[in-house]
Figure 1 (cartoon, rainbow, N blue to C red):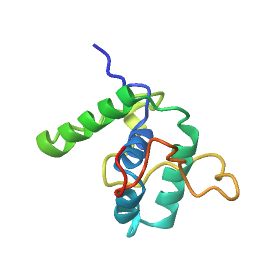
Figure 2 (spheres, helix red, strand yellow):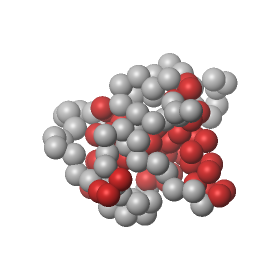
Figure 3 (cartoon, rainbow, N blue to C red):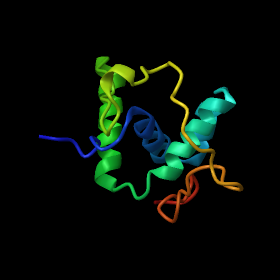
Length: 118
């Protein structure tokens, strides 16, 4: 049975993972990541469109398998397996830079932060 996360590339799955973690935790993780990688991740976030709760859950389950069972993140989307980045390697460069004034994904009304219930 196909997963709801199958439409995403690995980079997009990392973007969904960061979005699901929330702004503060994502910021903590990305603090020591090089600027080029952060920009690539921001572009992926901006291009995701609407991500359903089912898709977020499927991506998080895939990451759980990655962390707990050493199972690789699937390539999904249109990304060919032979050119897909492996976890911990450089991410592919996107064709166009992010729009001016946009720093990343709009977490929207669903994200209230650590102080407020969701």
